[in-house]
Image (tube, rainbow, N blue to C red; front, side):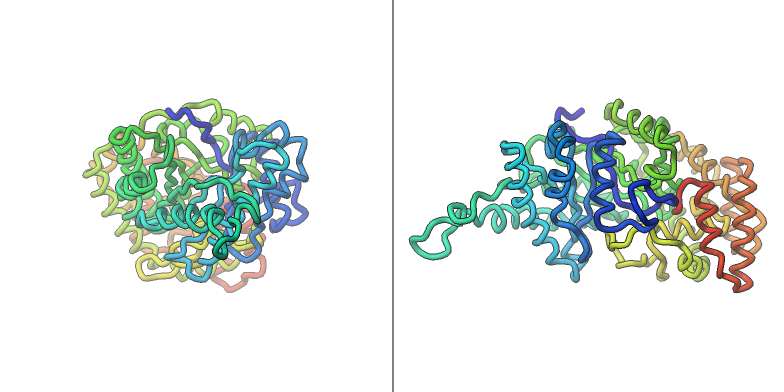
Length: 492
């Protein structure tokens, strides 16, 4: 639907993997490992875009220089900024106060990266021209970044420091590009359901040329409202964005931020056909670490090829009013069940190993999530914790559904039973006695929707984890969590 070269896949730095990539000396990736990762994604996996998280003191603002100089032969044939792309995710100053000034550092690095690229390619193609801002709830967040860049980054080249003196551009050189694209990342229910209004306000203010990208989260909405609700919210958002495209006669390519775990989107190499069927209007799919490193490389490259060879289409038509009712009732039930589970989740999450050393995207409530007045770990550790206890989190909240709801869900979400089956393989029925009656009711409803034999090896591991946890013998729980992750092919 878009004539512009916008990637079908974007490699990200989400640490949901069990296995370490071959190019990393340690299981916990850091520093130059992520430079190697970007090159590996471009050169070996044929992914056309790489996310670069610009949050945290260890962020490397010289990534463009390192890529172009270390892998010069590849980038001579694959022009950075035209054939392959880097997307910068910057802090949101309205939410991440302690990280706010990092935004300015990142924006200032864009012209410097242009100079490095220009010296190599001898053209005016910017290697960095787009940033994404998380936790967007207002168009003002986007407009401020766009205007700041135009006025105080590239715009300063046109001023003189003293009367009668030369312009800064004559002293330092020109500052390119003159403007940047700003992509919103919508993460809360209210923001996602308002994504069309917020995007339209930004478009009317900044008049982006040709297209305006939008990013819809999948993991954090699942953590806050439940997995089913997260998908249904996205379905409504996609329909509203499509209507906005028609209204403005402007391409609005959408990216979805999903991971390999069914709870985080079921976006894994063996499920590409269903993902494309379920989300035909999505332009860009995030390829997270478990997708890249927990499957055979041939399987991964074949899956990337499926995405790259597909074309964006129109979204499913959905009954928004009916879906909103289901979202409300299941999210209330989900949050109630989570409140009971929170102490267990938080304790188990301490044993979930890290896979990245530096800080990643901070999120709406800092390093933890606050749902139903309880604090939770980040989405990946949350997911890993419940799977490790034999309770796939996709199940939670489903006890609120009746048969009429199920029929409505299938019309909007045709592959729902298959996604649910992928998670139910890891249900440990023997552990249900340790959870609340409401959780057991949700499990029963899930099994009525999609019953499937469980994985025996995973079942045994989660029984061992639960027993060790209950007896306070937690010395080897981390080892068992990793073993279970190997079976699932994702950590969390």
